[in-house]
Length: 237
Ligand code: AP5
Image (cartoon, rainbow, N blue to C red; front, side, top):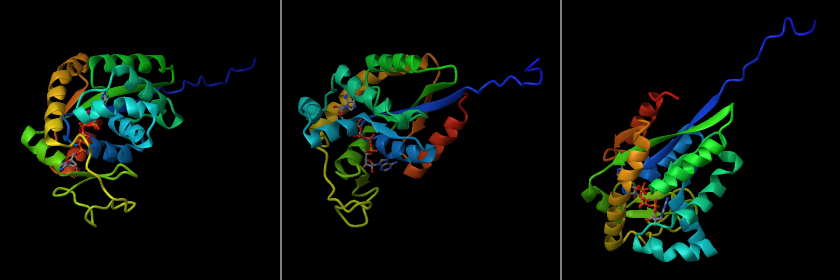
């Protein structure tokens, strides 16, 4: 009889944590997500960066969202979801990704849950884990008004806290750095207001599973990254 010596092979379930980095404007989400993406070797997906790319390229989505972003308001959930779903559906996201600035509303969180459930298989699943960065408003304002961004590679600098080697130019590709349109003080205040309004329902959404890491974001960049990675290591998958 065939198979008496055959060993029944059970493929292990591969579970990948998807860090969802949340926090007020200027909390360091982009800065930390870039570092986490390098450490975990998965893509960094920022809905803000994707939207700004659409604006820069002059796409129809870019034209639709430009004024909303300049005013500091949220882009409608349906537009965000369509754009994000296309990006996380690409093959480089199969082993996970780091999410920056998404979800911004409970409805976005629900759509993401449904997507993860739909893409779960017996051998593979993605598990969201919220990392919430906390920073005082006075610090946020200083961070945002001093921020400079590279138009080519989206690297983020700060005139005081992380200045480029050549003032005004990106360390990686030499491109001229720019100031984001929404980094004016009035718009920053509106963005902070929107964040305060929307964050509670999202925390409630994820808090039910106890999958929220609270991290103090007002310390040196490297220290914050270390703490996130260490805390993630203690989370059961
Ligand atoms: P988005 O691009 O997500 O902006 P945000 O949430 O306002 O956050 P920021 O990018 O301003 O800050 P950050 O936390 O990433 O800080 P960073 O690392 O750059 O969204 C922009 C807009 O797009 C929204 O207002 C909305 O209109 C729309 N949008 C995006 N996603 C959406 C969604 N899901 N739904 C609906 N609408 C959406 O750091 C800031 C500065 O501080 C930098 O200069 C940095 O060098 C410095 N810094 C960082 N960490 C430290 C540190 N530890 N110490 C000292 N300096 C530091």
